[in-house]
Amino acid sequence: MAKIIVVGGSLGGLFVANILLKQGHDVTLLERAAGLLNGRGAGIVTHNALADALREAGIQVDDSLGVLVKKRVTLGSDGTCLADMDLPQILTSWSRLYHLLKTNFPERYYLQGKQVKSVSQDDDKVYVSCEDGSEYTADILIASDGIHSTIRAQFAPNIKPQYAGYVAWRGVCDEDYLSKLTLDTLFDYFGFCLPQGEQMLGYPVAGLNNDLRPGKRRYNFVWYRAAPESDELIKLLTDDDGIFYPTGIPPLKVSWRNIHDVREAARTLLAPQFAEILEKTAAPFLQPIYDVRSDQTVFGRIALMGDAAFVGRPHVGMGVTKAGDEAIAIAKQIKIFGATPLALEAYSNERLQLGQDVVARAQYLGRYMQSQGKKVEQEHLKRNANTVMAETAVDISALLASGKAVPDSSDASTSV
Ligand SMILES: Cc1cc2nc3c(=O)[nH]c(=O)nc-3n(C[C@H](O)[C@H](O)[C@H](O)COP(=O)(O)OP(=O)(O)OC[C@H]3O[C@@H](n4cnc5c(N)ncnc54)[C@H](O)[C@@H]3O)c2cc1C
Image 1: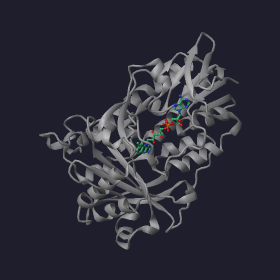
Image 2: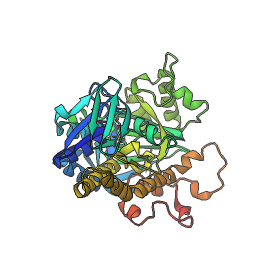
Image 3: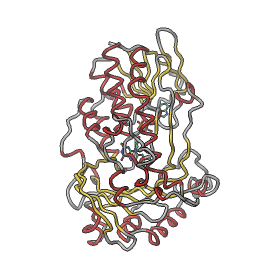
Image 4: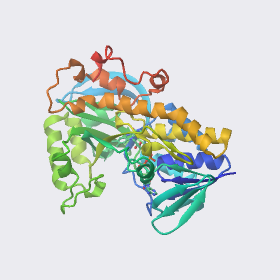
């Protein structure tokens, strides 16, 4: 039995901590937040690999995981259906996954209010210092401390999140607030709306307390909108008291003026069904979209995983699934090589290229967003409803396995 520290108690950290604990290791998880984490109920697209990772973590996967959606639709700005596509998928929510993983992990090993300040290592051990003065020693450390990872900043300071030039407005709207038109033409579907240079998508998720009953569910939306870094982004990340949050504005701090503006834009640009959803969502919030592409994820006895290692833009709908895959890979290599640098090196060999490919795929899917405001000669950057529906948040395991995350330029004429 090895002593293993996991830094970060969100989905990535909980995946690996649960799997390693099940393997019989002495796992301590350090999470900087003091209370329950909050994903604002935002939706998560699932893939088979995500269900596999949950099972590996010791969680039974059944119909209560999420809402089964059978079809995708793209609505025009007048609300009519432009195109549709059969594509069954289970849509769950961040909070559902967090609840499943957190309740499965013993509280005594999940230490909160533990902000890791720095990490060091020698030939035998890794040493962790927290802001509250506490210190920990272990055989290896898994860093799943997110996009702004403290541990990546210490060991690979050159790898930084790169802003993609646009943000995602997000939110969830209660099903029973919605009109019959929206319920009949959008609610049961993975829906899209594609005004020039923008992309709105949404899908149903469970309601309060994972309620999956019709009438009790919610519609989750993600609206990608260009926001130049020099002006619009600063405005969006500044609250009503003038405080600027450079790394992301807390959901409840989003300015009412910006919420007003995005609702107004929805009325002008989007299908009325989506505009209604935005209007009736109590507290829309936003996240800037970043790429993180690491060229090294293992440093002796320390390994990065989840968003700390790679962030692919959410068009791939892969972040959580990727974290689950990485957790499985880490645990598998530890089973073979023990909790040693050798095991972490083997994990890196298995996953580094795949992580980079996910980032490349996500950049490819997001390219048209970056063309906003620029002259785009390439016809292939034009959106196409069928292509967007076929490529967004689908299982790309076969593409990754074949090394074809991004099509050859000859294929790209059909891309978005
Ligand atoms: C708009 C949008 C839509 C998305 N949709 C999907 C989707 O459909 N499907 C999907 O799979 N993924 C999706 N994702 C991505 C997914 O949400 C992330 O990839 C995933 O949640 C990352 O999990 P993580 O555990 O690696 O990082 P995080 O959730 O960021 O967790 C990091 C944790 O580390 C803690 N921490 C940070 N620093 C320290 C420190 N110094 N000491 C201790 N603790 C620390 C933090 O408090 C936090 O709890 C989406 C993302 C966005 C922005």
